[in-house]
Image 1 (cartoon, rainbow, N blue to C red):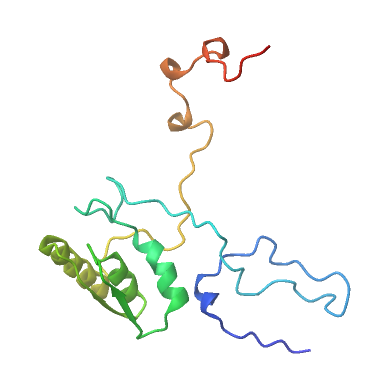
Image 2 (tube, helix red, strand yellow):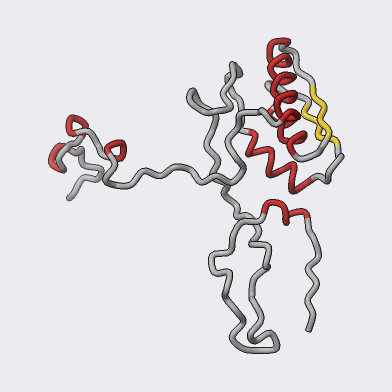
Length: 169
């Protein structure tokens, strides 16, 4: 039996299977792989770090969102050469995501300084010089023994110092 995979919009944002070699055990599909060879659909929770003071994408905008967030939406919901419109473009994260994936972009904002930054960022994206966090990069998790993961001694309290949550009768 030949199985032909139909492309769907989520193919561009699929994530690796937990058990890619798993096969059907019984039934008419016994011996065939039980998963999509391109990966599984992304889950309900996307873990993407927000743009803070030391984020590679940080600009002067007070509530900037990461390109990776809108990048997944652009890949899942648009086709190459489609137009991505952001009516509140800010510093251009959505426009950058669009041009990085061969989409057209348009947007507006009332702050001229934000529009200037958006223009520069889109220009850098088109030139391949945009500083950004790569799509799908895992978030750094320190090992339990790392110094940064240890509670400082002066902040540690013994269990007797902890306030009681519930009174006992």
